[in-house]
Length: 117
Image (tube, rainbow, N blue to C red; front, top):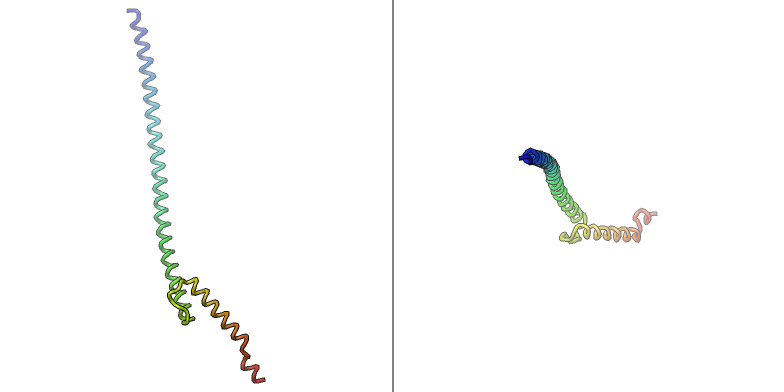
């Protein structure tokens, strides 16, 4: 009969320890939930930025393709002897060579003004 109060104290100690542990656990869960919400908010922000960047990239690719077509069309109009089915950089290279050839011919040909003198 003498052990009953001592057992009651032990039971209360364990109950108190359990409640402290339970409260700590609840705090940890709440903190984890808060961190998860912060993470999801930030992730959502980055996903939104990514969508915007992808859209901008698509727009830039489209305008680049249009600019290349326009450049190709211009070079083909200026240099009708060049094949129109080449890539832009090949057309530019061939146009540059054609200009160099014209320059060389012009340098070899006497100008009409000099012939008159």
